[in-house]
Amino acid sequence: MTDARLADLATRLPGLRLLTDAADLEHYGRDWTRRWTPAPLAIALPASVEEVQGVMRWASGHGVAVVPSGGRTGLSGGAVAANGELVLSLERMNRVLAFDPVDRMLTVQAGMPLQAVQEAAKAHDLVYPVDFAARGSCTIGGNIATNAGGIRVIRYGNTREWIAGLTVVTAAGERLELNRGLIKNSSGYDLRQLMIASEGTLGIVVEATVRLTSPPPPSQVMLLALPDMDALMRVFALFQSRLSLQAFEFFTDVALRHVLAHGAQRALESDYPYYVVTEFDAADERAQEAALAAFEAGVEQGWILDGVIAQSEAQAAALWRLREGITESVAPRKPYKNDVSVRISAVPAFLQAMQDLLGREYPQFEVVWFGHIGDGNLHINVLKPDDLDDAAFIAQCEQVTKQLAATLQQFGGSISAEHGIGLVKRPYLQSTRSAVEIALMRGVRQAFDPQGILNPGKLFAPEPVESRNNS
Image 1 (cartoon, rainbow, N blue to C red):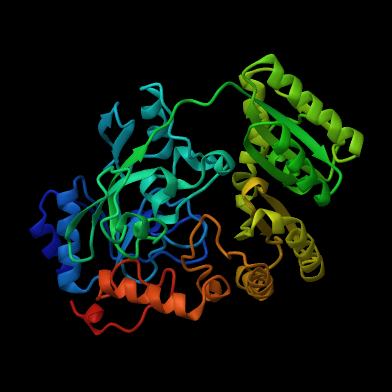
Image 2 (cartoon, helix red, strand yellow):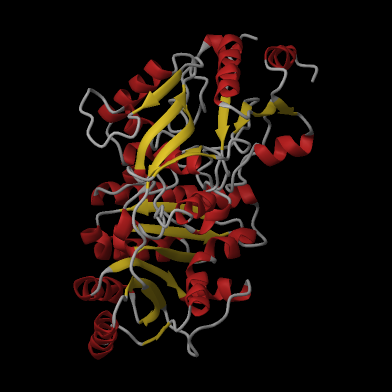
């Protein structure tokens, strides 16, 4: 720890854990994108809000950029530290702080994994319903930073809907208590909501008060095999009209092949072009009969070719693995990812436009489709051929992403549905937001962080700041 700035930090906060070994810098300096070489100054692992405040006061005084870090499961480069930033990891701040049975709220530290939050809620016979495959490693702070959605948005909405209050540390080291769990609060701007989806560029979320809800009724999981993309929306409309859906997720035969090769168990004997995993309320025999009738109606129309309904929790988990295991199964192929969204009503036309675009531009690449049909969020994974250089592969994909962004603009969609803008999608922000909106967002950032030290380069390109070069 020969850097004078780090020596000063250690003097100011003697109890702060600091890491500078090369292996730690590499581990904490990247997220799942793997496109940038991590090069942080050091890793700070505070254990309290006061230590976070101390770190930010030090960073502000020295003009050191800070990258907030949670589980680093993001796919947009939002947690990458490649330019000498200090990584501020909240993984040691992972405790439950309070439970209020009257308000049905849980207050937790931001470094708590999502699955641990869910288990803490379950201990009180309640649920925190936001859920996704990375639940064991992603953190509630990271979920808040990107307004994460996941597999049950159709029923419960995004993270935003479940955040009742936030404790935030600003770039200057000030502590903000935002909303404090109030249901009604019309006292000016809601800075809590402004912090959600800000990708760590306005402040560091250190604590969160989340709303809980009653457990859903018993449910059943069904796997459906479909002939084409047109059938996806027809089956969705059919099931939505007859059942109380909790989730409706689709994936392709290409995605299934990778998941099966990764160890998942086949659920249907034959192969089909498209699949849906859907979960729905099945509290009584009437609801189960309605599900069977919906299935049979889909078969009669030719929209459903085959299917299976889970007969046990183990089988339900096996069916869900076919969908949730996709990201992990394709990770070794270094996929180029697009996480996009359009209005649900625009999904059929957009899907067709994307099929045409990707078929024309990616004839030599393997493309893995999957996503959340019920909320208009689609994931496009282009797999890198083994014999193609990383830089050349990314360059080819970027050219197509420009066309994708233009298509999204025509459909009024978003280049980032639930993983944030980060570094990856920064060049395409203007396809989702107008120039006036971007200028206003820059103004908000300037108000919260005039030095530009919080997660610089994420969301939009940093503007030159002389003080950042001072040490």
